[in-house]
Image (cartoon, rainbow, N blue to C red; front, side):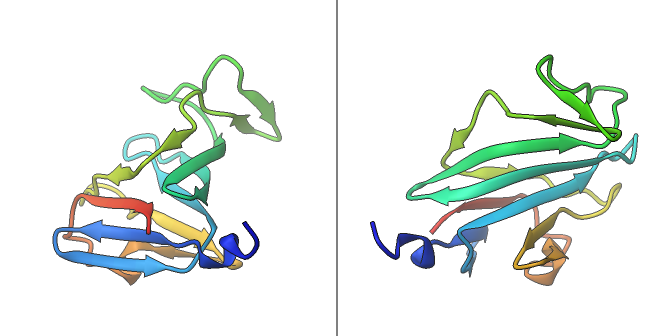
Length: 127
């Protein structure tokens, strides 16, 4: 499909709110609420699916061990998740940790840029 990537979008959905972000790929980032370790997941909008191509964990600790096939490079665990296609990703925001961030177009922004931090859960899905 020629030009399909330019039409791709990811939607942030919570209750009646639906915000379309005109992106064909993005990175989802967050910090573990206890260990404060950064996690990152790279997604691509693939039609009606989100394709999780790669993930990184910048450390390890309680309840957050990297998968067996993960490779440690410069202190960061890199791996390809077993479950790679999904219709949506649901995020439970918490007052006990920093908000999730979306990275695309050369920058990273807190979800609070689009939805108040009190809004939870937030779903990311193709739109």
